[in-house]
Image (tube, rainbow, N blue to C red):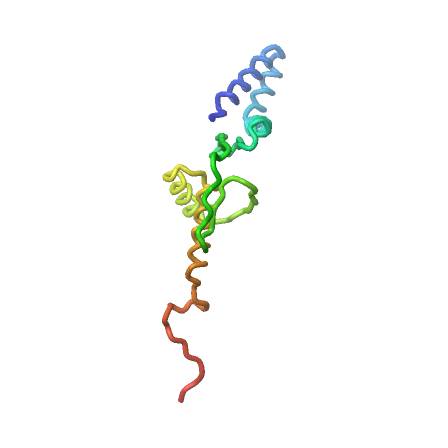
Length: 164
């Protein structure tokens, strides 16, 4: 959902109101309009999030979430599942994309972030969903075949001691 048209409409409304106030009011609105853009966007996002929460209460057990893609919100509708998901095979980590979630902050190089965003877009997933699946897959691989400690290759022999 592109918020630009709504932000621009508010800017035009401010300009129309300023016309009635004279040149000083017009100058003030022109100075403030650029600064207010981010505040207007945040207020619109808050309103959309509150609306999604209200819709979720009526839609339960389904849900509606607002996710930010760049500077614009995206709505994600999760309908209740018709049937329960199949249980995971022994040793397999099951990834639930809905349900309780924990928030973490991750710092990574810009090029890695860009590559993750591209991979998520190719799969038609959000970055969050893509990272959750990638983390689950990595955990599943390490659970199935543990990596050797100390960085030695599998099958490499390590010796300790001294020689003459």
